Amino acid sequence: MIGIEHYIVLSMALFCIGLFGVLTRRNALMFLMSVELMLNAANINLVAFAFYHGNITGQIFALFTIALAAAEVAIGLGIILVLYRNFRDVDVTVPSQMRW
Amino acid sequence: MFPIELSEWAALAPVYILVLSAMVLFVFDSINPRTTNRAFLAGTTTAGSLAALAVAVWFLLAGVGTPQADGGFGAISLFDGQLVVDQLALFFIVVVTVVTSLVSIASYDYMKGHTYQAEYYTLTLLAATGMATMAASNSLVTIFIALELASLPSYALVSILKDNRGSIEGGLKYFLIGALSSAIFVYGISLVYGATGFMQLDAIAENLDADYGPLLGLGILMLIGGFAFKTASVPFHFWAPEAYEGAPAPIAAFLSSASKAAGFVIAFRVFTTAFPLEPTASVIGVDWTVAFIILAIVTMTIGNFAAATQTNVKRMLAYSSVGHAGYALIGLAGLGAGANDVVMGAALMHLFVYGFMNTGAFLFVGLAEHWGVGRTFEDYNGLSAKAPIACVAMTVFMFSLAGIPPFGGFFSKYFLFTASIDAGLLFVAAALVINSALSLYYYSRLVKALWIEEPVLERESLSQPVGLYAAIVFAAVMTVVVLPGFGPVADAAVDAAAAVVA
Image 1: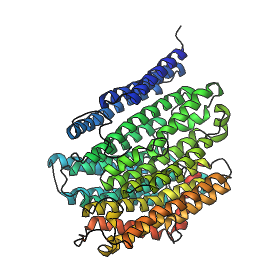
Image 2: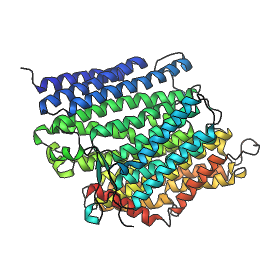
Image 3: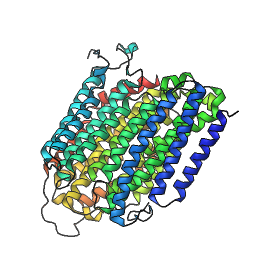
């Protein structure tokens, strides 16, 4: 029987994979994909908890999260596009005129 | 004034006005693509934000959302309690709309000759809408949606100078850290939902269950991450100097004042409404004020020490804005020791005064960029000979940010100081004083450059752009006027805070 704890373990694993990608990848597109993994980890949680608690709030919120993630990617791709035009690269460590 | 009773839909009028102005600009832009009618675009933005400001001030004075115990009609909740209009929400809508109108007036000159005029003003208004909605959000769902509505236009606004490498770099770093922190924030929401089964803040407070303590604790920690990003506090502060330095100066002013205030209002509301101190402490085992005490001290120290070492004026202001986030965090760190409304009220006052003085300071940097005098302290040498009025205003901002007595910044810091002593946070009070003393060093360095140093190069006479000047002078006048008018501001702030911490 698959219980709620299995879903939590799955989502935490997914979240950590995403976080690992964010911290290690230098390609801006890979960074975006890693953030998507983290967002989807939250979605798994939301849907699983919605089933567990027997109310539908979590599922509805997961739909909102998906829509907002799409909007975020749209903005992000736009910024990465101008990044490429200005620096001829999508490596996030290349733009370093200012110090971190 | 007598409290007025509003129907549900009317209570959100300031937010509707902001949305409608944005829609007007959308329609205008679709009829005249690539329009450069700056007078109409900046005019509509300014009129919209001033109208929203006027309505919000009226509601605030008329006691909309005052609790029934104080003779009002109680907080107005809309959409089944997803949004709530009370004094706290109105107070922050006032702060956001003040900053938006100053920024849009100043942008009239600053963005002259830019290709994407209509986009610029529309995005500004949409971000302001998001921030105003954050002030009224009463559920984790609406908080997240409003937060994204404020963030997404901000990413685009920071990187709107598409051929400027600094702007792109600032926008990229802001976006990357923003995307990461919003992912962490949503994960935090999902854990809090898992632990309680509800998204609405008051329902969460009623369903804190000791069985899910660790889950809830982790969720709260992740929520703090989201707030830290929005308010530019440690540990998610390092986007701030890059984004503010690269962004157009009015946008830097907008983000560092309005966006920070909006971040604080959701933090205040979530932690006071959804996680009341004792019940939460008994479930998760620690007092969450401890986290904010640490964050407040670390944030103000890092911000001020980093600001003291900068050579670039805009970057110095960016780090000083990190430091000020640390001061405002005292509003959460000092809760639970009796005088809750005074502690949080002091933080609200500080954010209000900060809205004027910090916006003004960034707009002065915008004016300097408009003149093309350069970015370092040396480049500002002797500007007072050519532009005395703007330099007087900048001096007011600097001394007010440092907390010198005759200006507004002194009063809000004084309240924060006494409030943190009343709350028994002697360490925090000491850190506040030490950091303020340190901040005087780098603020007066700029004043010295403006008034005492001789210019490195001879300058031509400088132009006097009307919009930028008007915004700077107005902000300076307000920073001084807050002195006699501080009583009502302080009362409004304490009342607004009392609404959530009572």
